[in-house]
Image (cartoon, rainbow, N blue to C red; front, top):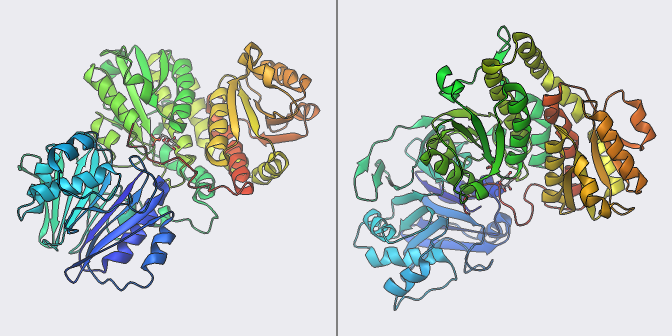
Length: 607
Ligand code: G6P
C-alpha cells in the first residue's frame, strides 16, 4: 500500500528520499514520485512503474535541496498514470501533497470548494492539495488543519509549501506515520524502515495529530490547534536486518531466517521449571485469565492461518472454546463478545485496516483485546491493552513467512500459559517447553529440503491448479501452503481439510490436478493415508510431506518432502517450511515478481 517519505535537514534530500522509497517498496505500489525545494524552486518528477523508472528520469537532475517529500502509489482512485502519481499539487504548483489513504467525500469537497480550480488528475488526493490552497493564509499547518476538518476518510499525509521552504507538515488519521528524529534533521515515513539507517529515535503519530517539522524542531498539534507533548521512543530494528544480504529475494532470506528469529520470539518467555510460558504483555491478572470463557483470534491472510493453528492449541491445551475470525467479516457482523471474551488481534504489520477495526469493535463491546504484532509501535500494538511482539524483525517480502512462524510460536506460548492455568500438568507443560526449544534445529533440518522443493517445482511448474490437503493441525498448514503458492506464483490453488474432499472437491481430481498432501506421523496419520489413497485412485499427481523415516510413504509416490518429527501442535512451525520453499521456487521458475506480487500489498491500510 502507498508509501510516504519526507525529509528536512542538512543532507541533500533527493538521495535520502529515493533510498527511503526503496525501503518502502515491499508495501506494493504501481507508480512513484518525488518533490524537492531546491534554491526556492519546487522540483517534481513522477513515473509509472518501479522506482528505477523514476530514478531514470532524475539522472540528469542536479537538485541540491535539503527538504522534500516522496511517495509510492498503490492505485485506488484513478488509473495507474503519471498524472495520478503523487506528489499532487494545487493550481499554483506551490503546495505538494503525498497521501496514503482514501478521501471518501472528495466529490463533495470538489463541488463545494473547488469551482474554478483546475484539476490535473483523477485522484482524491489532488482535491486535498487544492483544499489546502483554499485555506492557505501564510501558515501551512493551519491551512492543513482547516482543510482536514472537512475531510471524511483516512489519511497519512506529508505536505510542503514553496512559501515556507523549511517546513514539513505531516498528518495522520487511519494511515500510519512515523517521525524519525536525527541530528538537526527529521524523517517522516509510513513506517520506520526508511529511517533505520539514520536514527533509532522515533515518534509514532496517532490519529488526529498534525506534526509541524522545521529546522527549529518538531511540534505536534491536534486538529483544534492544541499542542500535544509526546515522548520519542527507541526502536532497535537494525538497518542490516532490512537488507537483502546477498539473497536473490527478501522472501528467501526471510524463509532462511526462521530458525534464528524464532529464538527471538521464544527468548525469555519459556519457564522450564513450571512447564509454562510467561508473556508479560498479556497484562491480565490470574483472576481475569480465569474469567475468560471464549477466545477469538482476529486476523487476515497468512495471519489467519497462524491463528487457526493457534485455535487448535488453545482448545487442546486450555479447553477454552476458540474461534478464528476474519477482520473484514467480524467488524460488520455485530459480533457476540462480552467481558468474558479474550480477543487477540494478530497482524504482522499491525496496521491492517480490517483487523484494526475488528479489534476496536471488540474493545467497544467490552472484551479483553490484546495484540500479537510484529511491527513495533504499530497502531494495533498501541491501541490494544497489551499483547506481545513476535520479534520476527523487518519482513519485507509481501508473502509472509517468518512472521507466520513467529505468530504460531507466540500463540502456542499463550495456549500453554492458559493451559497451565486450567488443566495441563507440569509434566505435559515441560514436554511442550522442551519441544519448543528444539524447534529452531528442526526448522534448520526442514530448510535442508530446499533442493528437493526446487526439483518438485521444476517438475510441477506446468500445472495450472493445485490442491493442498491436511487434517487436524496440518489443515492450517495446508491453507498457508496453498495461500503462499497462489500469492506469489499466481497458480490457482485450494486447500481442503482432507476429510471434506469427498463432499464435493473430489470431482476435480484428475491427471491435470496435482495434490500436495500433509501426511506426517500424528494421530490422524491413518485417516490421512486413506485420503491420500483416494487421491491416488483418481490419478492426481501426488506430492507428500511426510515424517523422516516414514518409508511406507514411498509406496504412495516418489515425490516426497521429509520433515523432522515434533509434537503435534508444534508441527506448523516445521511443516510449513517446505511449502514456503515450494511456492518460492515455483514463483522464481515462472519468472514472477517474488517479493512484490501483482495486485497485492504488504500493509493493507484500506478496507
Ligand atoms: C496482506 C498481505 C498478506 C498478509 C495480510 C495480513 O493481504 O498481502 O501477506 O498476510 O495482509 O497482514 P498483517 O500485516 O495484518 O499480518
